[in-house]
Length: 71
Image (cartoon, rainbow, N blue to C red; front, side, top):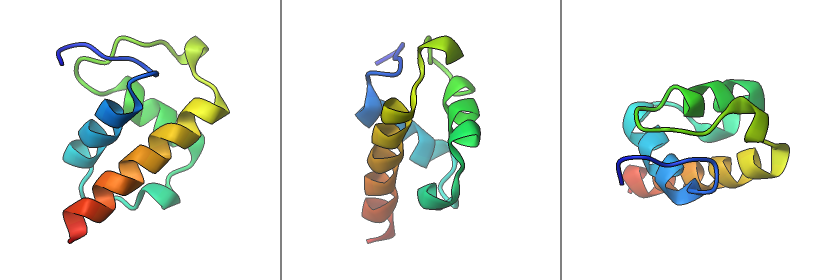
């Protein structure tokens, strides 16, 4: 997947884990999470289309990837 946006929560979670493998997703504030997502290569979404529910879904997808990486 070359381009992705806010609705691609699993892809975002995978890319966040690849980019920030040593970060516990549960410690990241939503404002920082939004900024990390916006900075991902290939991300085409905008800050205006991001809401709390989307960030929660992304955080949970990232957490799942984080936990999988730890096992």
